[in-house]
Length: 445
Ligand code: GDP
Image (cartoon, rainbow, N blue to C red; front, top):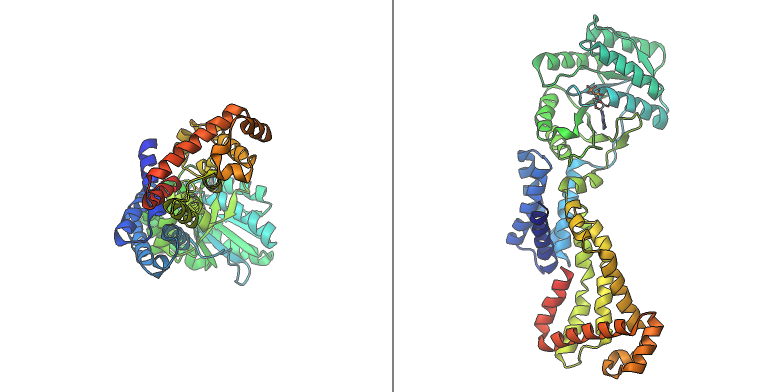
């Protein structure tokens, strides 16, 4: 698993950092990876196809072609398109109605409707300063009515009693009547769910909708449902004019591909995300942050950007020209190369951005040690005089002792660094300017 991912990742990064131009074929390679990532995240197949087609169109268009760093631009397009598909700015609950504004909660049993009803009640009380009433229309499960009573109390809202012998529509009428008489701003209506969609449930909720005329009809869906979320969303959105989605259980380990499917199928915004079982576990949905999770490549976008930004092509070209014109490779150039490695944000910070399986593997390399070693070399060169840096052959025993003392290291550390420098100098001599560029690119990737 880790090695397949390693291959995939290094291929991708190489493609992106090495390419000067975006062509139809390298876009196709890249999009194949994105497609895999989306399918692995349980996004429904038709939704994936649609998404890839849109990205392809944009990637081959002006947006990427005209840019200086096409690799980066391409990753940017994928990420932006993903975020744009899943959301457009913040959309809070709409309460623009003659009070009480009614909010109808719909979804399968176990999706998190009751929990979310209470979370929303708390949100509306605290953030919108509203007076909130809740009622349960789930007459099939007495426990569900009790559950709503309990969580409503936790939210600090008022609960309207209902019993299993009543008809949901009668409960709804009584609740709305009570809310009006007691000047409630909002009435949250929890409804019955089934383990799978059935006709009777849909007919019942349609009738409730007609009676209540809710200002919001929220579809509550479990992020862990994966592919099934697409079918559920289709059924609910065919039956009801949905106005928003609440994606629950995002604290679980699913990649949350359901967000993309559900958003695309219903065409309504994902308004909130459930992030724990607790009453305050509700967040305004953040499409951009979620895009990274769905792609599931750790923070791969940031990684690619960091790597491509780290390769300073201008510096590489200068160095190549210098070597070519017989200017030689001195310790200043060596230092510049070391600094470039540091510019990439430090190795351990790069490792943090990799997917977890991969970074666990890389962890065995002891990045701290590698980084310390880079720092030590830098310190040694900094303790040299400009003359020593451009003419390293001057550095004999006395100078070595002085440099070691200045850098706070041992003389053998200075020797080791000089040896590495000589090896690199040797390599440079053997290389033409073109080979040099290739090597710089390899270091970047
Ligand atoms: P309902 O049948 O649709 O009303 O679903 P419930 O509200 O009873 O929720 C079903 C289960 O999911 C309960 O155990 C909840 O505590 C849990 N749950 C709901 N939302 C979340 C969430 O955002 N995160 C987690 N971890 N659990 C949740």
